[in-house]
Image (cartoon, rainbow over all chains, first blue to last red):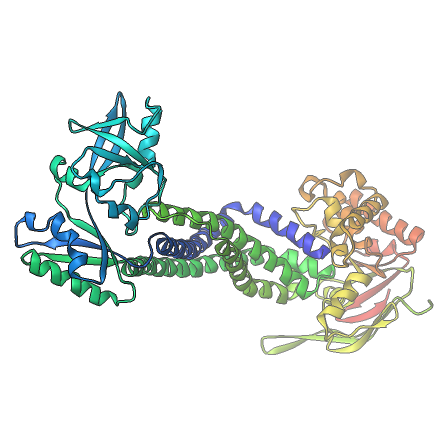
Length: 392
Length: 226
């Protein structure tokens, strides 16, 4: 144990005295460990994300997007869409919506706001909760009422509105009276982006007042006991017949998660490839540094042998050095890898989760690489003929 | 306690250099008594370096037996041999062979690190032996901050620190000026006289040999009494 401590001390000293070389050897290890960590960490994030998707929205929600239409736009209208559940029994509830981004000004303050025209079913389908006031209902048809997202409410509050409910938002020369405030909810997946920054008005009002108020997207709750393929046929069939050849694209929660997993797999594969190549290159670099170190310290090895060091003592001295070198690279790599996965999560708008198992893995892999790549140089050192080593 | 400290009987060693076999040691017999200060003198190529390595357990003989401090040396286990080297032998080299990145005190402690004793104990013992060779004021200096004579003192402290059966000194004054060389020899004599330490000095310098209690000659791999 004591010898171990001394070796540890010695290893630090020796690595520090050849900083430049040690640092160069580390680059490969850093990239290697970084990639591996990022891979595992992103895997965890995606897994968490898909679980969250399921929990949030349920697996019985699909989105329908219009992809091609021969007929006039008016045929893909709200009335037709709202009748979908009556015609096809396996579609339980639909929520068509329109959305457009805009800049909202309050004095000098500015906020990018999402204007959305929604039905009352939109709230239940998206599992949106009300913090204050009420949601929109069928009775609000054509009226200038709105429900605001939590970020928008905060913006109003910060800019002089003390009582949100009952106050007005003016957009495109129309004033909308606020009747409700939403609680914060995660965006992305099937749930449309921008809900927290949104002003939600009745769909009928939106179609009359918004520019670009075409319905392009519909959310629907379907019978989850029926295979997705049959649901798709139902929906496509309906629009084909009723809206003169309108074609739609349907995405289910399952598919979304599948797509997410594919994306992650591609990324993992890439990182895995980079990671293993970098680890091999890094490992060779470490081995090289250790071999140089052994050559440079031949006389030290000879001396230590003369003073009573066993082959095992010499071997462990160099092994410890190599493991410390790799661990140092590992620590930097872990930081890098977590950084990459954080960036990836942010760009993909997924929630970042710290993967502690990846950190353990990082330490494990770097120790292994250190031991593996240090083994040959350390054995070479241990097997040197003490007399020849002393003379050099 | 009357058994000799070192006892080698009919030690032979030969090397193959290309097609020819060179006999370096041709049946050496040598006995070193406890508390003796012995010099082995010989010209270069006489086999004295090989003999020194043999005595220091760094070289395995082709035949013959070697007893050190009453223990018969067995060569086939590195661990046993290394332990024996660590406990029984204290080396002093012509070129000092101090580790450049360690302080004097740390250098002295190196042999003890292979004994599994505590850091504190190692430090204490190292200081004690630095004091014994009058170099304690250089404890925190690195080799390149010391003169040759000072470095050799540190090396002697390192040889002594493990309380070995014997000190093996290979041309210990070879790299030093005359005055410093004399001081080092006086140190060996004092250690031998006052502490009863058994010392073998290998040299090609007959004057050095005169200062030792006994001298033997090695010529062409054979020992002759001087």
